[in-house]
Amino acid sequence: MSPSGRELTRERETFFRSLSSRAGRVLPCWAAGVVLIKVEVGDGGEFWRVAMRDRGVVVDRGSEPADATVVLSAGLFHDLITGGDQLIAALLRNEATVVGEVALLLVFRRFFPSAPGSGDPRDVVGGSRWRERMDETVARSTPAERA
Image (cartoon, rainbow, N blue to C red; front, side, top):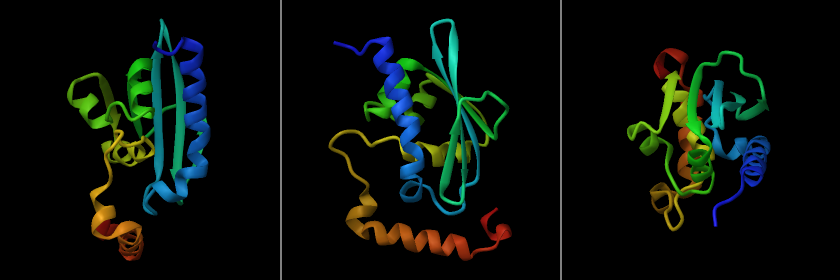
């Protein structure tokens, strides 16, 4: 049985409320910008603005322009937040659209869970220490080196 519209709305709200508590573990130190998510619901849409900076996020319901904008259906968003689908695959299937800085969207997708039963191969190679060393290296680099 698929979730009702009210349950899907509650899932989205829970997902976006959880971002600030997870940002320090998920975001690289260099990630900065605003991603606007438009979830198409019925004849309208829900807007969620996620401002990322200093390994933290601020989420609001505004629809002001952002550095990157992604538009997707409520069903696809449900699949993303439950690990049933991957954002890049949905973009390649033309089930979602993105405008703006795609790099920010690649960072934002880290908030979505992996598919059930899958894992990050870097955990096998070096664990979370690998990611910490990478973040430290990027933080020490100059903006010109990162460009």
